Image (cartoon, rainbow, N blue to C red; front, side, top):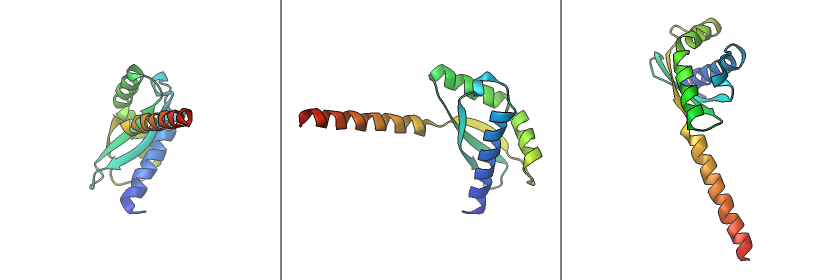
Length: 117
């Protein structure tokens, strides 16, 4: 694992822990941090999250996360010793939703094949 991957993973872990242990916002209840992508100069971080729920729940979580990003960044700075703590922006990770749809489609095909035999 390269240096950037280690930094990304450490940020993912810390932000996830902060959301779980330190933030009391109910919009963060079923939020999990899926991965982090930092810029090469470590000044910016795209933090991808998933959340159980409908589009309204997703939008509320994203709005809450982005509103709390300065506080989250400050808490990250207390836990991780880096020259720069990146500016954080949160993005919904659509890949999990996409994977779930593919999984469901494959299950339907499998069920149809069972009925045909």
